Length: 365
Image 1 (tube, rainbow, N blue to C red):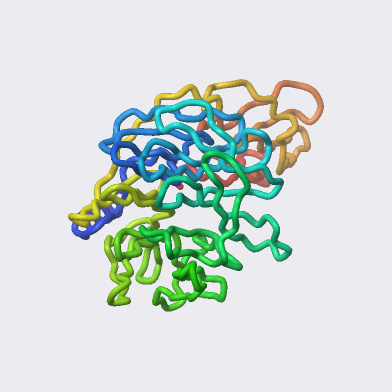
Image 2 (cartoon, rainbow, N blue to C red; image 1 turned 30 degrees about the horizontal axis):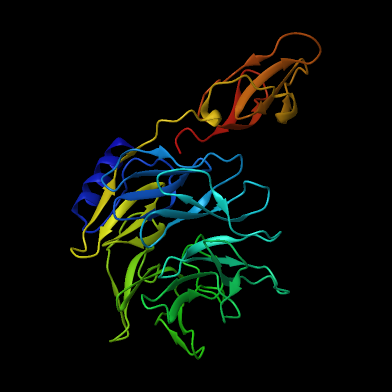
């Protein structure tokens, strides 16, 4: 096994582009401004310098905050939050403060981006839809009623710099369906908002998503040539080209900011410089009091499953919260057989002579 690992690491070092990301911190949905990166981690939003470092917590709601998007001037962050039970649109100062709620609807409202002038937040929602398909809406940052865009279906979107067109994904999501090529594979279309005419980004049944409009180019994520990575569609030539070679893990999300695209790969964050077309990892440290990782005592009586009786009938072995326990059939103390933190043991079974217990473990991955 060690020999195979060494060979794989050697081969990955020979490949161009991006391969394995830096140590994952489970960061999700990163967004980038001229100076900061904002991302979702452990259900909250965090900011960090574009150069990396120790992240600062931006939100701390009891629910989940995700989908952060910097305003065009970088002073505000729009995001999807659950502060009041529903999934709605919020904005907060990029330097911190009290979030402001912008939408009030029982159906989920998910932040997608901003209008180019920074006055309205773009979001997707199945509200007012009998079919359950998502549509795009905008809501004023100053407060007010949302307005729908003239598109019958849209899950993601990004405005052109002049605000007259929008690149969007009409339905989704299927990003997790690796190499899916069915009828629900997500395309990217470009709509003219004045006459509703549509231009389709060329593809061959690939899954395309996360459109990002810069100048006369639409960047996006696609799995058309292998693992999901960044491509560019030139509006003038109508040609698609791969921007970031990727022989490693899928890119899960991406967004654009001043001079760069920030992306998520296997829980890590990377930046693609749009001028040099070179990518680099962003080393991020999290120093937080997370209740989820704090050592604690847990009652496992209601977590017992997959019990197995010994051949003599005197003891029973079972699993609970990923560990194995042996207890007497009538009275006595329980014995912990594994006690392996971070490893799950499953499906214990006694050997016919009662000397051994076989089980499954994910210790090796």
